[in-house]
Image (cartoon, rainbow, N blue to C red; front, top):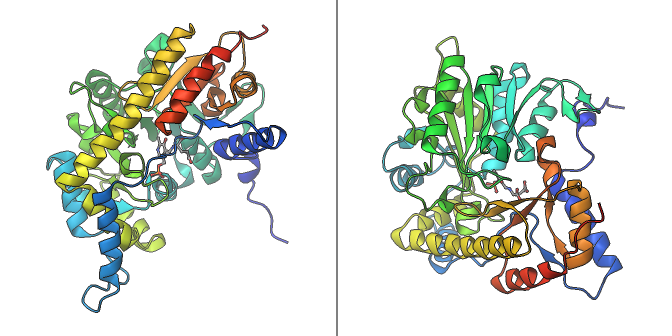
Length: 407
Ligand code: PGU
């Protein structure tokens, strides 16, 4: 028999979103006639737009011809796609050679963990997208789990709450090798300002840390004052990696396409290149994103595809506005929900899981409990704006049924 990886035993039994699906399923089995609406997982619901779809279909067709067939490609992606990402998403501020096309931001998080190994210290925002913590646990960077604090011993948690404007108190944050940072933030919906990101970059520079900046929701930013990429900040090229994804931009959550950026200037303490090692990881354990899907990505970055992307994102932004307004009307204090698809709500006097269950019972709406993202988020609920408009409208009508908690 094989001995179990002891790090696996430290993880919560199920990944957060699997646990939510499990509870949703049980509820549906008990209440087979009700229509359950999901404002839980941030998964896109609208069909692929026509130009992007055509890119995928034409791409697949090419593979069926003698001239167009492609086998294994360059692992970092089609050079045309890398070039187009550099131009369309970064206005040429990053070099195509620094872009690595992938099958999505989540698998990239796992591969970056492999790149850095288990000898690094890690800081995460609290709350944070659970993959940063869970993948650190799997790698063995986190030490033991403190049951009373409900935290891992060797992780640095950076509370991000309304009290600090959802931005960590860096003066009291110990140095770590890696800092995971997400903006627009999942789950709080907060978007870091230029000044805040400047402080983060300075902090990393002073500490010789590396920021892993997750910008998966960048296209939800419509305010031109807010930075869409960490590379808008001076000095970031020496201290940051950026993760990104087509998932929320064109509905590729199931199609799978993303990219990472590792700047040429990013170095280890011995002066060697992080990009070099990243290329080594990508070429060794990842054979690159599907070529069919990369054709879809190319179409998404055509002018027509960009317009479709804008329309799709605006659709979810309008959903967010509707949800946020309706929650406000029933007297709840909300955060986020503009420049972001997530609305973050405090349920006073209740734990997140209690509020989750009560919302499900009273309104048949699935949400995400804030505590699943970190203990600083106990008592919060995340509402996702991904959904068909008719479901969103139905959901907000049901908000009237939300009775105050018994506490
Ligand atoms: N980064 C952030 C910050 C995310 O919120 C998500 C998805 C991803 C990366 C994943 O990007 P891919 O390119 O699709 O891999 N978050 C969703 C889905 C949860 C999940 O992990 O399945 C959410 O509801 O938080």
